[in-house]
Image (cartoon, rainbow, N blue to C red; front, side):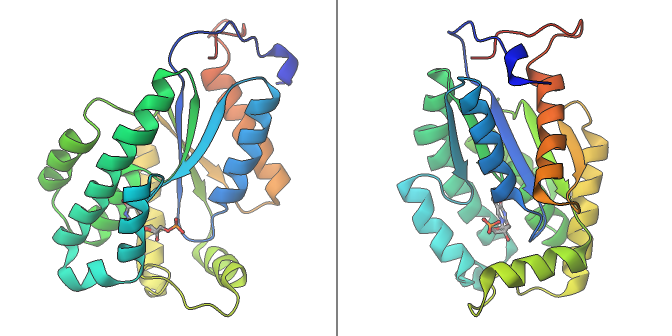
Length: 231
Ligand code: TMP
């Protein structure tokens, strides 16, 4: 598990790792910790987020989180997330992966599946069509889903926010956040090859150790237990 076992032989495409989870699940803290660990292992890494991550997509982020998208209805709001994703994939994610850089992304298409699909009732065929346009064949190599009881997550989100107003999704009721947690657990159960559900209740260092163990086993070692080319 130590960094010393990570062998970098250079060349090749970077790896695409996404983090998902409900409000207050600790994604940003865990992404930062993982990025530091990958950099220490001499793997070039960028951290990005959705909605956002590119100048055009950040403008859409502002619009969506202000609640403007909600006024337009779930389908139109989904289109806004798709437009942001399209810009982000083309201008940030794909170019980085092609340069051999590891991309750590705070939320990606599973967020659309969970928030707009399961909770907004946007039909799967609409989501599939949008995915075809925005991400094509791009699939995360690994998706870490941070799972935390809703009460704990919402408390953490409120503490982080301080006196600021909750954003468009934080402001939804507890039932919404319970359904969201279920939606993520279902995604993890449906796609075990790509997704790993991690208990995000413990302290950040403990969760970071779990994340690193998963990443190491899935992306940095062969089935025989040898370190592999990682960049
Ligand atoms: P966050 O960056 O603080 O997690 O805020 C982003 C919010 O946007 C979060 O509540 C989830 C929501 N969201 C969607 O509803 N659909 C999406 O496709 C994405 C990427 C985010």
